Image (cartoon, rainbow, N blue to C red; front, side, top):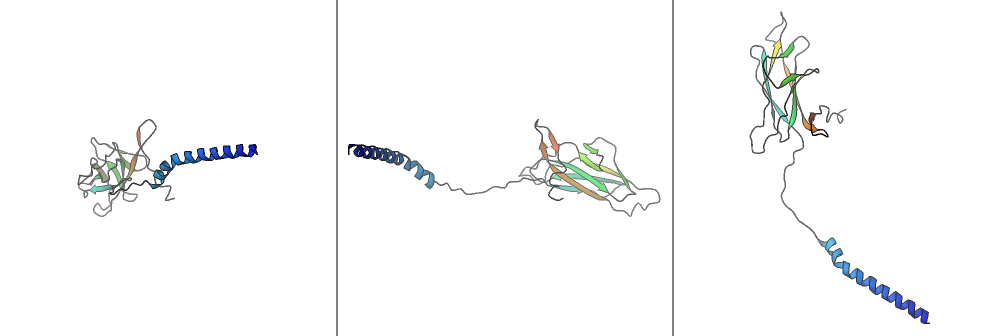
Length: 174
């Protein structure tokens, strides 16, 4: 009989200790399950880049092209000029941050910074003067010039060097 009383005493003390321990943490647990925070307001998050092309009519067989960054994010810009297979294009002489690539596009050298939220217009590239070479015997007043501009967000490598990924987003299209 003494043995049974002893076990009862141990079980009772263990249960009391467990109950006291649980009672100490009930407040923390209740605070965890009943605490809430409310908030109000909102903000615009811009994750992409967008640009707008500005081009003047052809004057003296030269087309002037500029690109404006209309987003708040910096980007790289390139421009392609097309008009069939007979007409050729070249960059006008002079200093410029534009350079012709091997793929038929002209690339703007520096990063085109983003627009401040309080500005009406965004930063612009320098003017790209594209000279149009029309072959002899071809009607110089009857042809179309198509200008295509593209932008891509600035991507930084592990050393912090900026670069352009012109294939970004194309995987979803294919």
